[in-house]
Length: 85
Image (tube, rainbow, N blue to C red; front, side, top):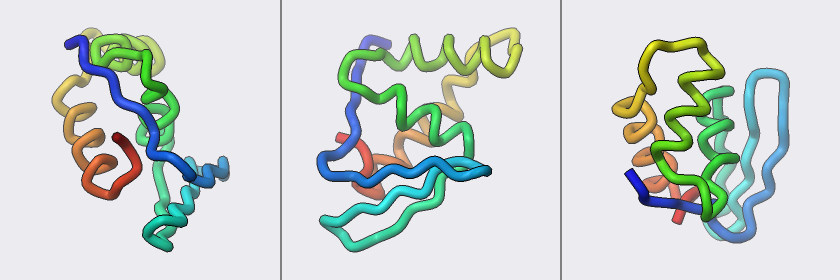
């Protein structure tokens, strides 16, 4: 897949021991992301494709195939929360 996404503007992203805490000022919400969701959010930089995200996660977790369905599900959740554009 060649689609690219980027983080929504104005997010306050802070790394914590078990992932990220993201404050979204536009909605006055705080989001807690686990490590995998944090990596996906970071990789959504407007240039990295979904296939590239899959490859990074495949290598990071020593998987035989990229977990594309899980990545798509996570991205859908991040988009529905307004964290990705």
